Length: 116
Length: 115
Image (cartoon, rainbow over all chains, first blue to last red; front, top):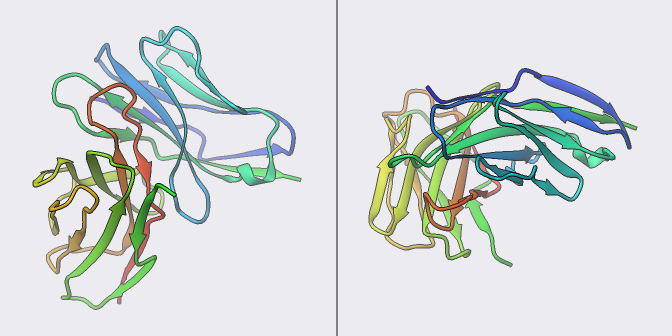
């Protein structure tokens, strides 16, 4: 069964420091995609970064990078130089491309608090 | 500006009433989705539509109905058959399902409370 696991319910980080949010996934498909979203207290889900299963390089997007370790089935999000505005819920999601699969599988999220 | 709008932001419903949540996008995306989010849980897919006049049930479609008469619009009706409708509802859209990254972009959400 396809599954996303985020083992950290809550994380704290000091402003300007880097933080890693963990995400492990389970799938038997060869072709899949991994997404990270940010959900601030306002509720809107904001897309951050994407990693395809065949991408050889780790994805980066500004202060966000994805530490993709395919053999370990992990796709951790690294936020560098944390800012107060990074305080939010962060969700990892996976999309499989085999057959007629049309949905994302979501983790339960990690709540990040950035301390000044 | 291109984006996804959802209205209303907050919605209160009495038991036994049907309510319709609006979702509009001007991104020219083919696919649209409805999710439900409950505290402490990830998003759960209610319905999705890949093209106008076509839609598919997601994981928790019971008690909900949708229509897709226009590419830009994908309204969700929460019927009285939905036993526990109090939740946060998120609408999303993507360019074309099943191709490449097919990133889903979300609206601001509607918080529904049953009184």
